[in-house]
Image (cartoon, rainbow over all chains, first blue to last red):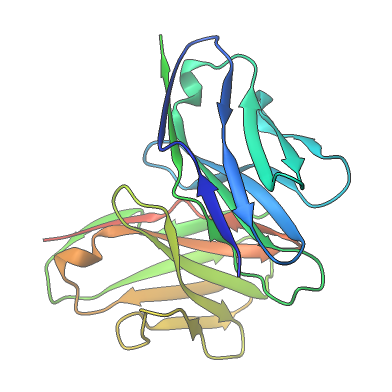
Length: 116
Length: 112
């Protein structure tokens, strides 16, 4: 079984400032990692994913995340946020290749509020 | 990726009634999932619906309360039966393509 911990439930940040949303995971097998974004009154949109290869992955809207296997982390970053980035962000994990389980496990979410 | 639509997008229902939520995908997929997102909470998997087999329910969810149909590879329905105010949530349909899950826009349900 796997689990995901998002360390901050709410993150306020001023417009054009950098932001980091933290995510740690736990799993006994290799994993795939995802970040989803949920804008107000909308469904979940895939922001980026790590499946294999380069540990730095780039996603939509200028976001990027770095997979750190030794620290079991997958933190999301953006160098300069915009008002339109105000949303809730979910980190999620599923077992990697050959694991036999497709269940996607979500963190509790981090609400990012961008202050003008 | 996949384009997923859900109907209705939102509804207000009386307790004791049932609501059927439809999920349509723009491509054929084997694995479809239904999630619930209670107010201010993360997503919880209700069940996995594979075409040609019975849905598999997660702990805490039963078929009598959340019957699911999966008549073909592009469509599924979730029924929320005998509703109570505790069923007020967002219900999301999801599909898996390769290693990635994609989500529909959700159905926002309020039970009075």
